[in-house]
Length: 331
Image 1 (cartoon, rainbow, N blue to C red):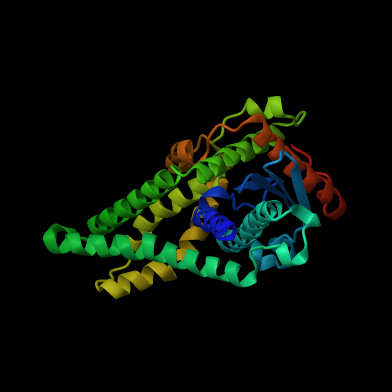
Image 2: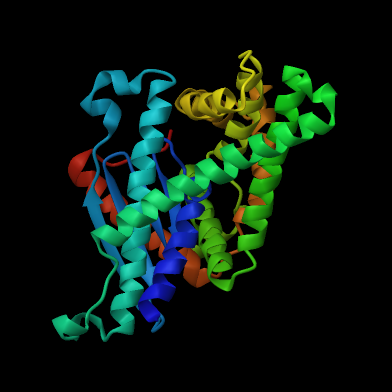
């Protein structure tokens, strides 16, 4: 029962993965995990998880930067798709690590007998990823299109391509808002949102320069322009525009378009988020405002202990970064 409860926690958190991580090749970024935080730098990543006993467990590893390995991966739009893919894979590894730390503690810790140890293995991780992908396509692509198509039969005015996609997009955003709000009712996920806030506060403190400690990190807000929540909201808004450009009439043709156009939309959204983060007073920055508002849900005020986890994870990543890419300097 303990194993399955922990797996369900992992499954629920995986559905939120795009909203929790910051898919950006930048100085520092991060992601909330189960009872902890993962932080990454250009060439390293670190994770710190707090056990029920209060002890913190940390891990760090080297990280390849895609655009340095293959130059074409750094091209505009392409880099967004590549970076998002790498961030999602790393994010799931971090989630799996945090789940297994909890399972290890529940079964007696490192000193437990091998036959007593349980963990989330490769096949369960694969099932999780497949289910999550299916959930995303069904919940955010198929269901909104099905609902909008049904409404078009009742209201012929929705035969207008732009109006149809506005309704389709409105339903998609509504489902997303309902999901992130509803799942936050679960205590475990609410704590993930608190660690998400701790991650953002720590990133802000690092970007601002000066000493990186808990009191200083706590002085910053929990919403950040490069957050995955802002990215997802931007994707959903841009979807409305892109889908309206194609005169596709059949249901399955529209559904195929929604799948095929996703990489392009993700790449464009990445560029807009990247630009808006640098030019926070620009017109494009207005596009990220809904995501910042939504972070009032997906980030919650963290405790000092949660911020301490985020700082520990960042320290672990920075220490390894010195060995692989040099010390980061804030301009």
